[in-house]
Length: 349
Image 1 (tube, helix red, strand yellow):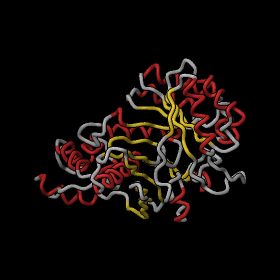
Image 2 (tube, one colour):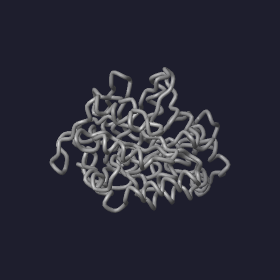
Image 3 (tube, one colour):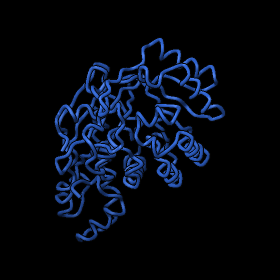
Image 4 (cartoon, rainbow, N blue to C red):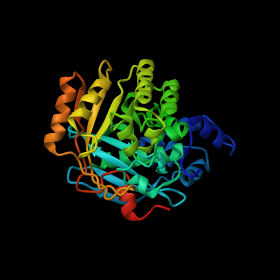
């Protein structure tokens, strides 16, 4: 462990107790660490002799290896981990001038092989620890503060598949959301998945009162398997059934993510098929405009749906009674798509 972000309160209490200090200091040290977005004046805490010095040795956060800022204020950072590997995190500006949203990664690289995603081109390297995910949160909250904004929401939708590193993701969520630590709040956090059914069920059982987003991207199994190899394991019907179970248990409205790709998943027939799937389901459809990532692993060069086709797709969903809208694109003038900055920096190992 190299950072205070690596500890839960209980773990840190045991850590300092083993070094001869009273465990009662743990909660206020971590509170100061999180309130300082990864930095704190330990001397001002009036700690026992030697403890502040020990803490300065632990309080190292993720190092920023690269940083890009878009015209709309979106900031993407490439963070260097203790082993030299890198991950991406993003601070996105909201419509309100004083607020921001954040996106963090759960793995170094990704094994899902989604054909239109840049992350998949670098393969999977390892899972991130809870502390490394917390470190990303602190880094982008600092970015928000420097822009005069407050980080209000966070999504685990960066590099990697959160459901394949769920224990660490949920521990990171606990630290980020909890009072006395990240203090973001449970309802402000969303975990996204390509549709790993056992993970959805496990997250429901964890009962953390957080949101779920499902990257569906196609209404039928054949198209979905072409775009997301994970689709060969979990059928659309099974994924939506798991989303139903999650929603029933948590009372949190599930978001369906759908990236419109020209000539692939944007036809009127597919819009009607998606509308039929969602009939009677109280879910929110988030339509995404594609950020091109170059030639895919399969050799395809995907393009986003044209505006007329995209708006027709939206109209079909809304006329069927579905709650649907386009997510506002951010950072289009930088390497905004997941994995692009890391690939450009040549940091895949």
